[in-house]
Length: 197
Image (cartoon, rainbow, N blue to C red):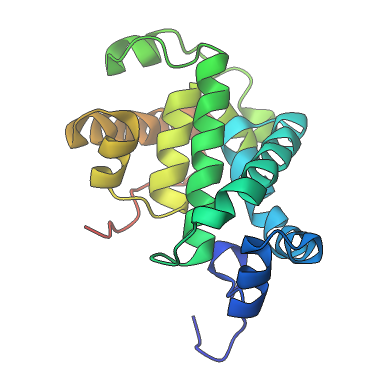
């Protein structure tokens, strides 16, 4: 990214005055934070949950929690990273409440995934549609690693698993997506993005 280009998403810079006012409970500062950061929260929640209504609920929950939690925000990490973490945690909680986190075995996780090879052709170019075909936990790991830049170490901490667990889920997810694309004879190859670790 060019240093002169404005930052977007969770990388947007929030000025210190707005943060200080928000910490004191200033409603207009909270509204400014919502205007600035609600879209990245929604986008991340939508990628993970695949439902517009669920993503909107996550955004509302995150900002309601943020209004209280911001008093404890110390500024050790950029505000966007802190808010992203809150969004990820809320999405994980949502998936847990729907019982999508039962069973830790990667084999079992993918064993219940239906074979969509006959219906892939219609949405082969719809990345979101293909992502939604993955089991929720697999989709979450793929989105967090490949799109949001989480390392396997960070994922291990987030899920209370080993790094090899998220590596296994990611590998199986990419293979499953590639298999679905191959059934339509489209020459697209999915590869893991370069890792930060």
